[in-house]
Length: 95
Image 1: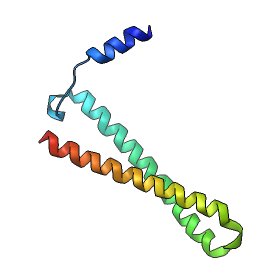
Image 2: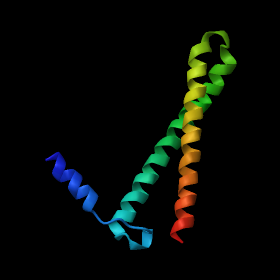
Image 3: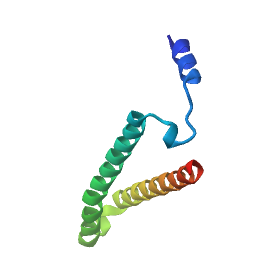
């Protein structure tokens, strides 16, 4: 079963541009990207104000939690920048 899935995956058609893709596939990518971006925006909208307020209220009690929050937000930011970079590269190569 796994071998048949791998052979189907390797034999599927590969598209070079968005204009070659079927409309339903482009719509799937657009909707999934919109949902992911919306989720990240929602999470950052909830986390950043709480983090900023807690930083002002108790500086000593947030040592490791603050470090973990900053690292997490940094990773989310780096991930967003990587997605932006790859989107620009894809857009440049498709036109």
